[in-house]
Amino acid sequence: MTNTAASSEPVPDFELPNAGAGPDPFSLSAAAADPDLDAIVLLFQRDYHCGNCRKQVEAIADRYDEFEALNASVVSILPEPVERAAEWQDSYDLPFALLADPNTDVSDAYGQPVRFGVLGSLHDLVGRMPVAMVLGVRSGEPVVAYTYEGRMPADRPEVDDLLDEVRALRAD
Image (cartoon, rainbow, N blue to C red):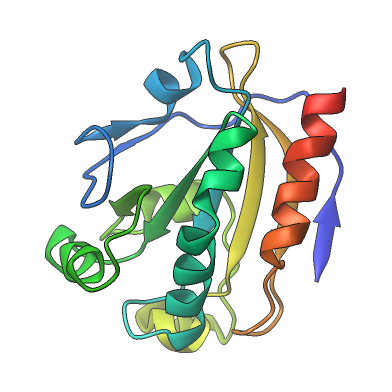
């Protein structure tokens, strides 16, 4: 696991199709401009077939009211076409944005690690590792407050850890 401290560097803006709750397409800059929002949690998933990814979004969906109570939203980014993201949404009825990043442009811009070289880059389920980020958005411009880079497919922060990071951000 890798945890990083807050950064004052702005993060890349993006717009992606949204198969989940909220606006479609989803724009990071538009979400960050919401004056009622303090944080955005980004979850970079591995693949449509990833069981650990599915468990993560279900666990967060079960406790999404806790994120909302902290003025935080969650955005899950799936490196798949929008049709596949829509299948996840149909299966899990997620209360947060579920974005399709079929060319992995956003995942790559945010540095989602891929292991096993060319093979890993050809098959997300084999090579792409999970990443969770908490972005502070109180200023209207998102900045990284916390990053968790999984070293293995199941290596992800617990929901409580993400909530604690959002709480810590709010306390600053």
